[in-house]
Length: 261
Length: 292
Image (cartoon, rainbow over all chains, first blue to last red; front, side):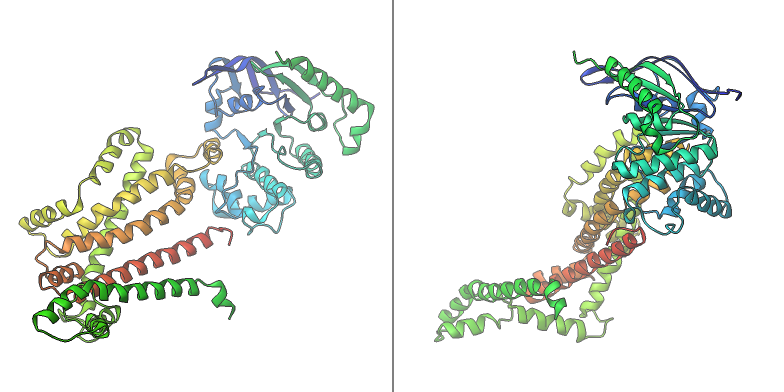
């Protein structure tokens, strides 16, 4: 039995954006616990606040109500201690830096010495299977490769928590499958805690230990599903009855939360 | 011969040939009044071909013909020692040196102002309107005062002219760089925030590299108007040296050919500066991995 250490704890988190069209209720009464080693997927239709919730954990947005703790600190304190690696929807690589330069960026900022920078960027590049691409500029890589560099960049400083905002959303199905498999292996090896935003049901079912289903207007959690799948996963598993049952439950949750009135 | 097709050689040559033809025609038209007047007074027989010939060979034409300007340039560039007051190289260098000093001062000032405006919100509100207001004052009005005031406290020569250049050229740099330093993608800025990067790290590693295209665009505008500033600054300084002085003495004595050759030299200098900026820009962009 793994001892569970609390990484994220949210209690009645509310977030209201003041816009020129009036207030927008992005998050409403979010209760969520994330333990060390969890792979949590936040799934829901556009506008359900899944990205916003991720940004609240990352201290890129401030909640307007409720209480949230990351590593038993405020999100801001956690951010200042560089507690997490964030992967955006787009690769967000700096176009004037080579792959290697992009990987070293966080290390330069954190004041890590040159030899260690080189060692770590080499190491993470191996982890995402891109050795030999050090000197390439981002535009010379395909979209999938760029996103792998972006994941590698978040791994360079070895954070325990990975926050990922639809990292594979812009990729085609085949590349997405490959990256899902690859990333799942990576997660098994590194034992990191992952919070993963997606709107793909198979992706959420395949990767997660726990799936959080959200619904829009206002963004709230309507179901939290513990995965029934074994820890060791393969892409073929997606045709098994367990996988289909899990997908079905996620779909039911999404349907229940999705009203058109 | 492939380079001929791909380069802009033909289009440039065509424009040049067209302009030259128009110019020769205009020279005849504009000079004809004076010449016909002269023929009438001195009772000289004339026909159209004599008029054309004479209008391209006047000593003080209203509009000199291109070859007259070229000959005058050749004489005043290569015909004298470069230290001579008659040498266009000498006058050109006087103007170039204050252009470059003024440009350097304006660039530093413009960049510093932009950095301040982007990082300090009070500066954004208080300084930006003044920067814009500063450019509504005609430079021709303020230039003599700068020269006179600085002359009164003993500052003469290159510096007052450079200050006028700087006054003109800090503006596009400041405005361009405010825009440039604010141009990073929000995602790139968020990334810096997740790393808990300091303001100066965000500046050197993100804002500054993102703003390079804006920097070079404003440099190209600025170096050309810096030259204008230097020439304007030479006008009230007693017309001792510089291309501005050549323009002024030329107009005192009706030496239109001299005016035109000074103008040509000025535009050649400005063109070369802009070209050099483009070369530098291409080099920097290549190093920054811009897709060729």
